Length: 154
Image (tube, rainbow, N blue to C red; front, side, top):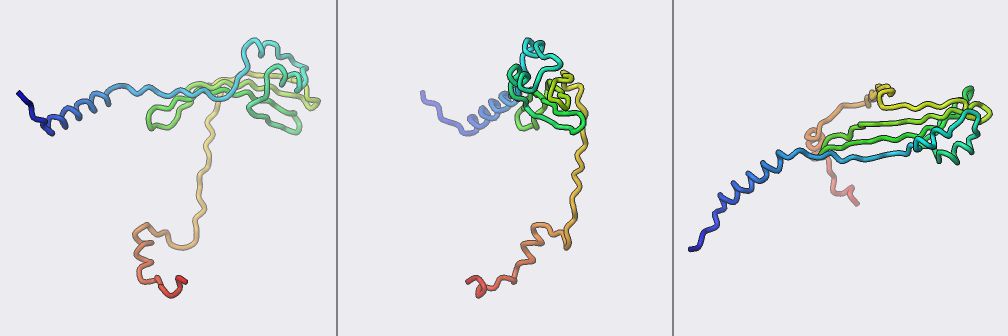
């Protein structure tokens, strides 16, 4: 006895399989970014150390900042970012070690900050208007009809 292949049966089975697969929760992709020194290394950090000693102990900083009156600062930044499917990445954890130097390039203080210590900054996204009319795609296409001169293409 031989069975016939029925396209409708195959389509229904494929739809059911796709539906069951869609119900599975999507695991987020976890990405570890940056570098934060280990706790043992941070405990060895002392006030009065030079920049060279700090770099030898903790490594190169993620970023630096200089303020003329206060001196330089080293920042060691580590973040954990999760991305789920097509959604925007989300920072789930962030740790920052800030090492501040006095004007003589000696450690004057340090701090350890987390994601909860951060502040959201609103970036102004204003646009400067241009002169002339704003045309949509269809207006741009139809405005060019009849303006093409084949003799000027050479």
